[in-house]
Image (cartoon, rainbow, N blue to C red; front, side, top):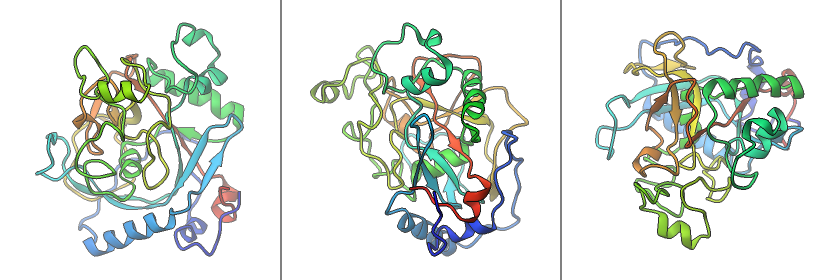
Length: 309
């Protein structure tokens, strides 16, 4: 897996150290003044252009990851975005390190390959469905075992990493635009309450009252599937309010008990699938609509000379 030193998006990798093996988040760092909006626009344009051809890596269990560039983006939602939450205060975020993000949610088959079948013995549906009913603590147990099995370094994404990847350069509510669409994401598949997509999902041959198999909807510009809908995804952060200041590699570790969940799910409404939408849950809760996906750190050699194939 060799990195192309001539690729302008990947050149900064040569000056970046490897992720720490310590899976704890880094503390917040604040800028006194925001960087120019023009610079932000240029960074986003370069990032999207550089990922026209996907840079992928696959681990020994067949889990697929896409290389995400370092960059800047505006986290949160504008005040005129429909269904905006009060905690979605816009602020500039700088991601200083490139990282790999899993292209899909962790699937039932992937979970069983690491954890065994006992935990999900009564799980219904195919092995390519996202694993759900796993707590934040369950996810971290999976990560510890996966790290030991593969020798790689995995962790849950920070909330900032998650939104950065979900947007993939977009500033709209969803990566495709401002309006939710039953043909682009799995949501409102709940006949008992939120049933707005039930007829569409039935026509597509999807089962009601559950998520869809991964990769059933189009990916975003960076090659990530189901960032909107299907299953809520645990993040590393504790849930807390944003500050309206520029931050570098933010991750909340010091306040709050609940852990962040992102992305919306099959169970609920379309607006909960917005890129900026925030939710949370107790780290011990196992919810029928909540799963996770992983971040994989670059190795020391990749920071110098390697590239995903």
